[in-house]
Amino acid sequence: MTQTVDRAFGEVTAQEAAQIFAGWVSDLATAVRDGSEPALSDLFAEDATWRDFMAFPWDFHHTVGRDETVPRFLELAKEWRAADFAPSGEQAPVVSDAGINAFFDFTTSDRVDRAYVLLVANGEKFRAMTLQTQVIGLADHPERIRHHRKEGKVYGIVEGRTRWTKDRAREAAFEGEDPAVLVLGAGHNGLAIAARLGALDVPTLVIDKDARVGDQWRRRYASLALHSTVYGDHLPYMSLPPNWPAHTPKDKFADFIESYATLMDINVWTSTTFLRGRYDEQTQRWSIHVRRGDGSIQELRPRHFVVAGGMFGAPRVPQIKGLETYQGIWTHSDEFQNGADFPGKKVLVVGAAVSGHELAHDLYEHGADVTMVQRGATYVVTYESYHRYWSTLFTEDMPYTPDFADQMTYSLPNVRVDELNKRLVKEAAAADRPLLDRLEAQGFKLEWGPDGTGIIGAHMSGRDAYQIDIGASELIADGRVKLKQGVELAEINGKTVTFTDGSTMDDVELIVFATGYHQFWGHLQPVLGAAAEKIDKAYGRAADGEYANTWRRSAQPGLWFGTGFIRMARFYTRFMALLIKAIEEGIEPVDPETESRPAPDGSTAT
Image 1 (cartoon, rainbow, N blue to C red):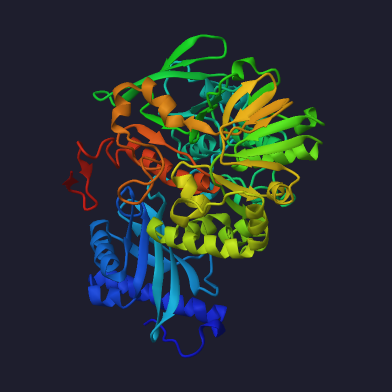
Image 2 (tube, rainbow, N blue to C red):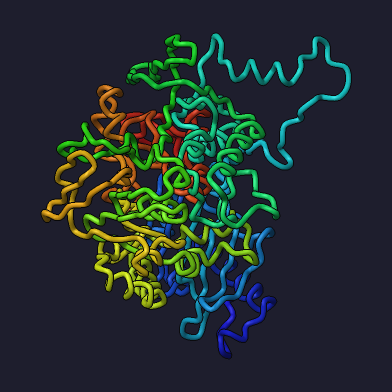
């Protein structure tokens, strides 16, 4: 039975935590076996939540509160034959201020699964406050890793042996055959899903319009670096080495993902432009036309088309009278390269989100006279506070591997994540108050993200009005970067800029538009025909509170979307890849709305 609480929680030792957790898992297994709602209820706190990532139904879902969680868990555990509950042999329980953080393994009908649970002192017992479950693998189709890794060169005598380099060239060429999966975009999202699918023996091809993998990073401005830290920037199957810098420069990251594509044996066609696609409901295949680097047009007929091109498409530049006759230089942040090219120049940076701040920072450091135009309001958090409050699981001395830390990171339903973000935004603002006060004293207008949810809320809603400060905010607060707030550019005459408030600025020699991008889906939608009509949006929130059409089945069978941060790619690609593999193996139908699937008990379900 679960042990009782007989003293202050903070005094629980690691050994005692392991014993408490083992007892809780044993009680969980008994309650599930017996189908006992009272017994299971006794293991959960009243305010407990559960979030599931395809360990039960092949989708994402969640519950909030014990009264909703317990009957739903029992229902799905019975339907999907949950069994074999046992504490994880890879990750021991960890005692923190929040409670006992622990993991257990289990199985469902055709899957190998893992769960994370946060046990808290509740009454006389330790009860679950947070439960997260996720599929780890398919029982009959393990990933080609560790004990199941590929042989490589087979030793012994092999008649007509071929060389590995020729085999790889043949695999990547797809001559006379089609990939099962075509991935659009060779950024971290596209490469991560391709690596996962490759480990599951699903023939996959990635296409990218750039000449080299990583060029989407190489062509960005010279001062760019990742805002995430090295501890959370690993990609599936490949951790960054211990001597990797804490803040990865963009060119180094470009080289890393190019190396990743090579080392992971990912099939990539560079200099390849997506032209159009049509989905055949009868054959359940796509007809996708691409233009290769030599100008030839080729048709591909994959069963799955994964759009991993990021959230944003073409640069957005405002329409300004006189811009076409401007006598200085103007550019979008997407094309801007180096502040070192403009020493002593009077520069106007239009836009006050991340890119606008970093370009203003770079230009100032190289001797330019910089003015920033802040048209609306911006959420500002310092780099130190951002990682102190939002990256607590990813540190130099993290007690979990990234795989386990990811599971904890995505353990709460988004409705609770929103509540948490609102609290963290307030705590970060209190810590950053001296800087924020100085910014406001300069006339800089602050906001706090959608409904106070900060960067995470802004990102999920498709907004980019935020700034993680690595120096630019200090320059604005000190007046070293000048500020024009609440205005737009109305007209340009020669090198004189007139603003919508009637004020002017003379001798402007460079204008950088850090004004964001058009939505990528809006750019792609017209060339996908009828298949696109079912997709109202890609990313953002769906009606069920999970991501809309992203990392899960979309409303259009065979069409998949993947986008987000590096951590998101590492975490969510596991589920997309396993579901695609399940479809390829006949475990799941292509379209569950119209096709039967084998029920967990062996009968037929619809």
